[in-house]
Image (cartoon, rainbow, N blue to C red; front, side):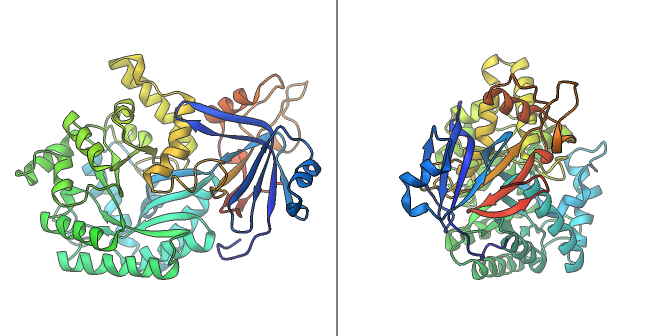
Length: 465
């Protein structure tokens, strides 16, 4: 269903799970959520079984459609705060490389090829469909330096109804190959401004798609380019996304390229790129002073654990970032990351926190509840949507996924339609335990339907109203 298609008022009935706080999940085993034709949650009822009782209390909803979940639960849509749609075709092809060699070997050639709108259409359409199938309702996307294919990505997101921040990548130094870079600072700004204008023209209110200014990272941009992008961000009030302190050789390179700056974070701050609308990916090796600076500027961080492990970049100390008051979300960072699934990133974030704990203290460990918070409410704060999505609160918009789990019969086989499902439920589990099993064993086969602003944007054959 396209984003512009009207929707009927709907009552969602069954079990609901969402993050109440960083450390606490709220589980409602028998509840109802009323979503109006604008996709806004108008009421939340707990301890109800019969839809007739809900309609009797909310008489104006007597003709509302009803969607029930069985053998599972409703969960907020995932928010991917950092990924490269242009690298999707390379997923899994990081070989034995580290960051800088991986860029030249795999990434730049693939991104350069997306000047072809035909190829871009194929890759971007597939990636948006893939992320939706994993329950991702909002995504911060990097495109390429090509304005028209980046605009095409925004078109696809709007048509499919997936919330997205879509950015044209900027890079003007010889770190990037001659065949794939901006020809000048002026060209980078002109093309970026044109892309911002286009994205705002197709969705003036930014209800589904919004532009985001995207300097690739400090080494790929001259100081003058960074400063010009900072000025563009101030002029347009657009969001900003870039990378920071992903690995140690990169940090050393930044220090050599920007000798007047005191740190990697200071490079961005000097350029006016460290703002409350800034998303910084990775932040693996920030110094204490940089953490304080990022916190003071209100910038946000996207934690990409799978990518950081795949490229041997390091283990981000997420607990320290959270303790500093920084909003943190999760990012798949395809194709440095190997999966488009934020559920997979939940697992990876938990594992990485344990690696950090082995070298420090148990306080560094992230719980399952905390990982799910980063995947939803934390991510919402990172992309500036904390008042709209991330939970099932009255007044928020209904971005959700229906999660269904299989059950094991007495003989040991899975029953019914979920024979291919990866999660085994034996009947003794509480809802909390089912959620735990889903986090550690689940995948897109369990996500049978996805809604954005109350619109059904993905479903499988296992979805039954």
